[in-house]
Amino acid sequence: MVKTAAGKSEGLLSQVTALETVANAHIVAGNYDIIVEIDAPEVYDVLKAVSSDIQGLEGVTDTKTYIAMDRNDG
Image (cartoon, rainbow, N blue to C red; front, side):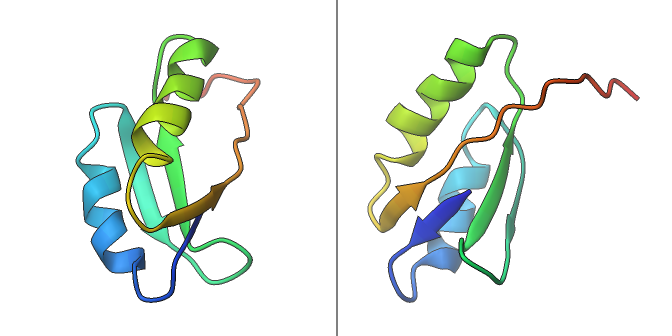
């Protein structure tokens, strides 16, 4: 979950979707502005993607991370 500065969601969406570990990302209405799904083999990789890649983007003001505990491989 990503909060953005006012007017930054669309520009950030394209930057977020360009990241290698991002499987899906959508602008949403609610407490957060973008929902991002990261596909990574280890929890460490997910946390690195959020803390280094996403939080480092200009215009990101806050993030909240949820880790899926099940696998949906199709």
